[in-house]
Length: 207
Image 1 (cartoon, helix red, strand yellow):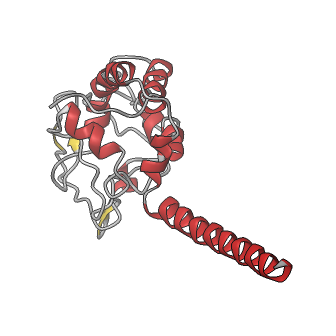
Image 2 (cartoon, one colour; image 1 turned 180 degrees about the horizontal axis):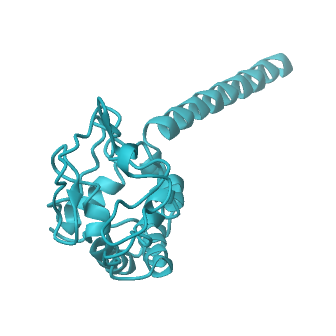
């Protein structure tokens, strides 16, 4: 009887360990393939606060300072009226232009002095061809869903989305050079709304 109980106990321990290993593998796999969902599951849920915050975020993302570099087509937009770039540069596979017409030929590391001259950044570019991250023409609902989809947002999880608020090209929107309007709120206000949206569940406004 003692031997039977001992063997049964060992069997139970072995099965428990095997289950833990299997569960650990599954969680690791889920974490790698569906981390946005897992991240959101750990967040508090406040759909009202989240949606209200995104409506303010959306106003910034639809401003020329953001939408001009997130066009539907492969030519960037330009100016406060978001017209097609007059020099018609093309996106290219990496988003940095094609052949001799590279973005950084004109967009230097810093803003060029003078009215309506090229704004600058060491890494000026459009999103790449395989991840266009289009803002132009998106509704608030569409853009909110897009921004938390790793297949459309540059493979970013919630943590990386939070960090993206301080990306150098994002910050450039508030330093666009002379003669250009700024986004409709300060960067500090935008970042607060961005984090409020994400931290409360990253809900999308209704269609």
